[in-house]
Structure formats: structure tokens, C-alpha cells
Length: 379
Image (cartoon, rainbow, N blue to C red; front, side, top):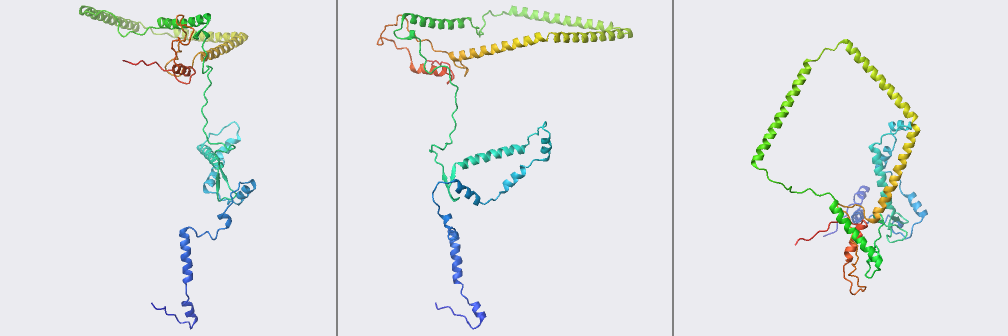
């Protein structure tokens, strides 16, 4: 293709019409490409905003950064400021110290917002700002000075029963004679206590009641007795109705004299009751020291009863666990050898104890686990 024809340049009008604008178009195209690529503002930014030194913050630098930060108040904060204003009815109630205003829902919303703000500030406190606002440094969770966000474990009440209980000397494989006899007596007493509680306890209701079957002739007699009772009850009701009818017919008309007597009697009874009330009140006033002494004695007895209960409760906790489930704790029997089983040698000792069962009973006794019923396998 040939070159583009040049226009005439004789007059000023021709100069204005034929000026080339290629460099301006190239500049606008380049600026558009840079804006699409995200690098349009890089040449105009200062070096401090593009590059920063990784140094720990100081109080002076953080204060300077806070001063240079723009103080634009958001719309939400403006609304909260309006809500924080005291209303007229609240100001009127505040003047009187004996009247407490009813808390409104706005106060509850303020409390919720305050809690959210505190949580947000605590979360932001974990991120340490750098010298400039351009970046943040994440707090090291393994730092000794910092505190990790860990949940507190539940603390259980310490049991008075030790984890490992030392048995009596008589339960040894080669015990002294007196200690062995004491342990045997304790084991026999426990077994007899179980037997007596089972025998002397309340008997369960039997499912089947023993007895003879009623014959058909006896059934007829029972029906006849029921009919006689019904007839007797009907006769009694008729007699009561007849007496009530007779009383209605015998009612007399009350005269004015009788009415006056009744009024006077009522007034007399009212005065007597009033006088009796005053007399009782004077007696109570006279016996006020005795009443105070009785109240002091009752308080003392209550305090003694309370101390006795606390002591018995502590003793019970030492001997067994608190009630945790539907089943009661049954202590394991005393592991004591009989007189014939004592050989004095560990080689001839008969194995009877189970470590797993002993630890399980210890956990139940300390109240860590609820006691369960022993399940027998059905064959």
C-alpha cells in the first residue's frame, strides 16, 4: 500500500485538522492494559508502601501509625452512638434512687454487641502489627510468653478413698495367727450381714396366691349375699328420706324474741373470743423470755444435727462412693485365705485374685464410674 496523502498545510485551519494523535492513543491503550493487569497504580505508589523491613514493633511506631490512620467513623458506629443516648423516661427514673428502671431490649442488644466487640479485640490482639499498616505478623503459638487458646479441663472432686488400698495383714499368704483370725471374723461378719438383710428384709409380692377354686354352688351363695346387701342399703336410704321429710314438716316459725336471743348470744360469744385473744396475747408477752430460750435451744439442736449429718456423710464417702446410678455399689469380698489353705509358700499359693476386677472395683468405689449389675451369661 502507498503512503497516506498528506493534507494541505497552507492555513491554520489545516494545521489543526491534520495533527497526528497516535502517541495519545498509544498512551491510553497502555494505561488500559496496565489497569486490567493490576499494575496501573504501581508507578504512582511510594517505595514505603511497596517495600517494608521485617522488624519488631515499638510503642512509638505503633502510636505514629495510629495517628496517621484515617479516622472515618462508619455508619454502624454512628447508629450505636445514637442508641447509647439515655432516653427521657430513663433519665426521670434515674433521678429517684428508690425506683429501678425495667431493663429494655436495647440494653440487652448493647450487652451482646459489647461482648462481640471484646471477642473481636481479643482475636485481633493475637495478630501483632508491623511498623507499617501494610502487613501483620502472626503470633507464635509455641512461644512461652504467649498463652494458647486451649479449653480448660473439667476438674473432678478428689475422692477420700485412695486409688490403691492396702489390705489387712491377715490377708497375706503367710499371715500371723491373730491377724488372720481378725480378717476371717471380718469376712464372716460381712457374709452374715448379707444373709440377715436378705432374710429380714421385706418379702416381694408373690405372683401366684395359693388357694382353692370356687365351685358353682358357692358362686350362687355369693350372688345371693350381694343381693341382700343391696336391698339393705336401699332400705336404709328410704328410712333417711322419710326422716328428712318429717323434719321438714315439724319446722316452726322463728319469733322476734328468738331472733333477739340469737343476736345477743352471738355478740356475747364475739366479746368472749376477743377477751380470750387479748388474754392469750398478754400471756405470750409475759412468756417471751421462755420463747427466746426455746428458739435458742432449737437452733442449737439444728446446728448439732447439721454437724452430725456432715460427719456421717464424710464417713460414708470414706467407706463407699456416692449414688451415681440405679445400682448400689457392692464392695468386693475380703480376699482372705482359710486356715487349711495357708501353706507359707508362694509356690503352693492358690490363685484367687484378679487384677482387672480389683481395679474396676476401685474405680467404682472412688466414684469415677457408676456401678453396674453383674450380667450372667445364659447357656
